Amino acid sequence: MDNSFLALARKYRPKKLSDLIGQEIFVSTIKNAIDGDRISHAYLLSGIRGVGKTTAARILAHLFNGETETQDNPLDLYEVDSARYTGVNEMRELLDGIKYRPSSWKYKVYILDEVHMLSNSAVSSLLKNLEEPPEHVKFIFCTTEPRKIPATIISRCQRFDLKRVSFDVLTEHLQNIATKEGAQIETAAANLIAKAADGSVRDALSILDKSLSSGEKKITENYVQNLLGLVDRSQMYSLFKNLMSGKSKESLDIFNELYSSGADPGVIIQDLLDVVHWLTRVHVTPEVVNEPGVSEIDKNMGMELAKELNTAELSKTWQILLKGYQEVQNHDMPNVIAEMVLIRLIYASDLPTAEELVKDLLKKNHDSKIDNDESKEEKGSDSDNTIKEQYHKTEKVPSKGINTDTVIEMKNVDNLLKDPNSKVQENNIKIEKKDENIVLSSFKDVANFFLKKKEILLFNHLFSHVRLVHFQKGKIELNPTEDLPKDFGSKIGTMLSEWTNQRWIVSFSKTKGEISLEEQNERDKKETMKKMMQNKRVKEILKVFPAATIEAIKEEGDKDE
Image (cartoon, rainbow, N blue to C red; front, side, top):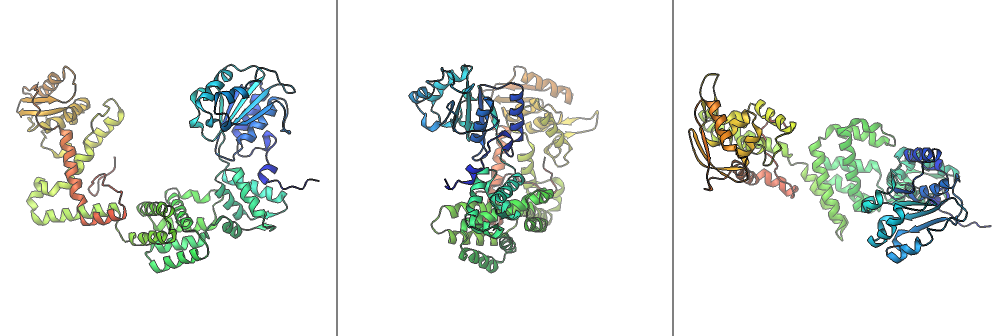
């Protein structure tokens, strides 16, 4: 009698279509296709490792031939590893017998596992047979990398993407298998295994197999934690709370305790990342605490901490831990690096967020403006409104190459016009009441006036595609940087004349002239950014986030568009 051990993944491998778990769409589609006699000549099954691609292919092979479940190794079933068939000769050898009819089945079935590993020459040899196969031949391809498969193969197949098995389905499956093996597994323990497997049935059964090898009749959560090298979740939350509170001694004591008990430093940082990810999800969508498989400690601590922390703090913590995790993975002293990462996180909790920093800078600028010269504030002097003006320059003016035929552009223009602080409202364009004169004192005024009139295409040309050579009342001389419509000059002149009730002439010159309005905008933006980067508090932030940059400057009260 053969008493040899058989791994759970092989012992409980599905033999019938109905035995496949977590693939309801695939199962129902194939069942209907077979019932309706609509069997394709080629199928492509893709998905992560361990979700049942090869198993499903074997079941399909038997279903095509009228058998409801898999049996042994039929003569007319050819299952091969594509890594072995990378050359033309090997592929020709495999397909040499394709012209001969099957000996016992209705169809010959070729299962090519990991088909993405075929070489270009092997694919070329396969294509002819795949495009016009004999009536007695079926192909089934399996792969974990569908993007690496040539489009010429994909287009000739019916493709099914087998999805990751859901958390609750996998947990229930593990409990059923444990019962069949004469053991019990706690729901919390099954949850840990399902989470570690990440949707792979084979991975989950392999971990369960290892758990049952201990001889224990009841598998506990603590046992699975030790088996997988995981840290107790309550200790991880305790460590996280101390880090966020800036308690260095308590934090390092917990870390050293975990390290002494055998926890890997990289795993500790990884678990902290998992905590931050969970808290961010709870903060953004609180209803996730009611999802299946969420432990009580995650539910309770998640709700508590998510209320105390904001998105900016969680994002900052995530960035520090993520960079720290990479450092731990690439160093010979992971425990030392992990400690330094935690210390960095402790002291980073005292630093202001980017929003607080900008708000503080704007407040200081505003206070200084009032103290120096109240009269300049009324006139909107440059010294008072530097940051404000630069914000509008960098954020409000459309960029080069905008598509003027879209609804989005018109929405942006409407936002500009509605904003009481917008560039259109602040510049020197003076639009008086009806029947009164319109004063345009500069080329920038002219461009902004076209924006005001919602002439977006013309504004874009004036802003990005021309340089000013000469400007005076009633006459504009421009140097084009790109091809413009032939009637551009006359159209600008005609519209200005109509709007202002005075004659305007727009001409073109080969003289280079000034830089374009867009280039002026970029220059001013860089200067402002350079000044901001020299600020003491900004420098402190950049020490913690060395890869960070200032994307925009906004005044308090401004809304995102």
